Amino acid sequence: MRKLNSLLLIGLLSVGLFSSCSDDNNNSGPDVEITPTTPVPTSTTLSGAITSSVTLTKDKTWTLDGFVYVTNNSTLTIQPGTRIVSRRANAGVLVITRGSKIDAKGTASEPIVFTSAESSPVAGDLGGVVVAGSAPWNGNHAQMEGISDANYNKFGGTVSNDNSGFLQYIRIEYAGKTANPNDEVNGLSMYGVGSGTTVDHIQVTRGLDDGFEFFGGTFNAKYLIAYNCADDDFDFDDGYRGNLQYLISFKDPAFTDTKSSGDFSNNLEWDNMSASSKGYATTPITHARISNLTAIGPNNVTSSVLANYGFGARFRRGSEFEIVNSVFLGNQLASLSIESTEGAAAYTAGTSVFKNNVIHSIAASPFNIGSDVTNGLTAAQIQTLATGLQILTNPADANLTDPFNVAAPNLMPKSGSSLLTGASFTGNFTTANGFETTPTFRGAMGTTNWTSGWAVFNK
Image (tube, rainbow, N blue to C red; front, side):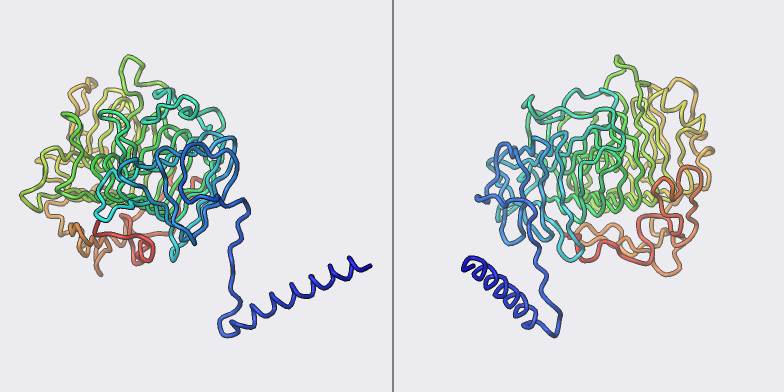
């Protein structure tokens, strides 16, 4: 009986304690505390393998020390507002291995931030974020790039709707760890990630390699920003087949990837198979669908534009594509380049489409045909098949607010801009495929700046 009375007393004290907490904030409502559903690590430095589910809380700054692998079908939960840093000497790479999950749900007011811990940060201080799943891919890569440990570098499978978790309202800054010569980790790498995964509101800033690279998989994504990254902003490989909407690609004229000759820094780059010996037509074929992209090239705005700036969109090695309602401005070379016979055949057949877009390039022709295209497709035919196309001779005619300001780009259309109207959503670009059919604008922005509150520029 005494034990029961003690338990009742504890219960009453608990009720009184919670009541008093609420009474302290009558003007604004009760405080809402986020209670971790999994244990919190005892050390704020993370290294090696994480073998059970854990939560990173926003009241601490967490440090990635080298490669950190989430394994054993575990879930890494990251609270909104959490800051995760990396030291240059042993740049951290977070790897969500196949079968495990990430639950990183930031908010517009409390984004999750991966960044450098250095007082003077540079690209490569952080490795990057890598997520592996069990969705289909075409076998082009047998293992994940930059990850040599055979215990953790496998990806892909047969589960199209595989779920690797949530990535929402996240900034990834100063990524690009050099794992091997000419082999850096990207800002966000997705390997065989399935359509059950939620991906939206991600910004990759000042990465040494690609901003985003998707190797196979079937997931969809919205509201992605690649800002001042050295290599390609969006790179698709290994049979990635997903639907993407509201994308920003912004290039710093003075920052490119110089690791090899001919490896241009592009806004977009597609590949299916890396080597023709494997067969460019190997399925599944890389086939991303994009609507509402704004891709900003260097535009010769200064004399310091580097020589290896490339194309707005470069389609190589058998890849297929669909891009609609989008804007390409200031591309140093052509806005659209098709560089394989298989890719040219897909475009001629209408499997690949480039429709309802506004383009401007520094190059004499906004279209390019690769030397390996042998089916007779010409630059003039590319233009003819690109229905709804608007070619600008002056990028100012797009009527964007301040599109080439490296420190503070403003991609909002001005009042009266033709980009505020004219969007079309037909065929594969419907709500059934994850696209919004209500926006009337072309490009990433309409009348609402969806970067406000969580995205950061001037880096």
